[in-house]
Length: 406
Image 1 (cartoon, helix red, strand yellow):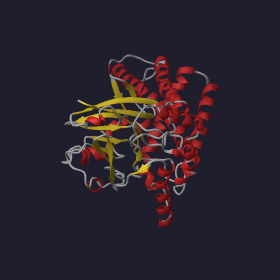
Image 2 (cartoon, helix red, strand yellow; image 1 turned 60 degrees about the vertical axis):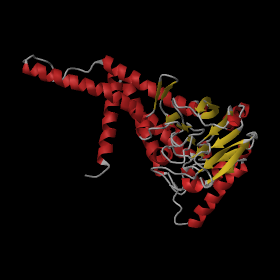
Image 3 (cartoon, helix red, strand yellow; image 1 turned 180 degrees about the horizontal axis):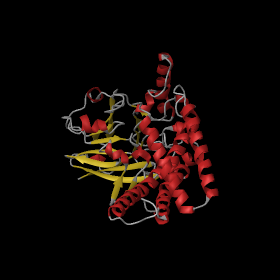
Image 4 (cartoon, one colour; image 1 turned 135 degrees about the vertical axis):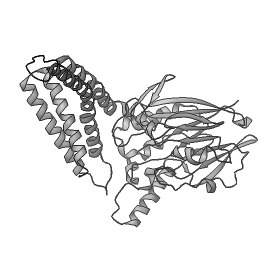
């Protein structure tokens, strides 16, 4: 059986139930025609957008729009299917019951209830409105999240030391300079000692960052520096280079240079000693290492000269690295900073009560602070956005971490 059969059948099922709900709820032949025309046009725009995708170019404003429109088109309709499908099970059971009881009815299946269709459309309006909000407002609704982390072995001089972290800029997705300048102002308003950037400055191409270099150069200096590591998107792995290895290598060199262009020291499987008064900590930066992504990171190489008893801050873009290697490593990495997941840019967060995103099925550690035997991981929710051109529930994050001695 061809692989495309199942997706097509599911798409037809979703579209059928959506039309039935609309038809039952409004009972207007003119509105039915409008619904059909809008659905056909939207579907054609989505298909056209996908056929225009060029893997040698990568993500563009058109592909962002296409993916956003597809989600806006499908997710609310998928919500509609659930109550109508449950109603059909009920109608089928009622029909069988009437038949067995020899109860005369005009049709085997009872008529659809208008109320159920209205409820289905009302439920669908929630993700529809949320997705529109995410694409218009949510993607630039920057949040400053402050987190205090306590350690038994923090050097005394670093008690109260503050770190700003950003991650996953994805500059190729930006479309509003004013909002990005606002985010830079938010960063500059924070009182901190050092700033760390945990990867993904672009989607794929160094040229994506060129319009934003001057904006990011406005990030103020910090007493103990600004450092960065690479993320999976910084390697140009998601483009078709058509066998041109030199172009790919040149792009990679230019991407690494971008971090320096905006004032960050890029750590490539290496470490720096951060000295304060008579104490020191080791700042370690590995290249990207992901369980399901590029594994260029070399933790042992990056940690050369660092001892187990030293206090260590590790920058590693993908939190799966912490899961697989870092959290139980004999060298005892006290604090790891990651990003990568974006919280899927979709979920629900009620501080202190609820934190959920579908990405949690793939990444057990996907946003915020985690601890295992006194070793901590903080996963930043991301500064930018990728693929879906918005954020719903999981907002772009600027993290301020304060280190405290327990």
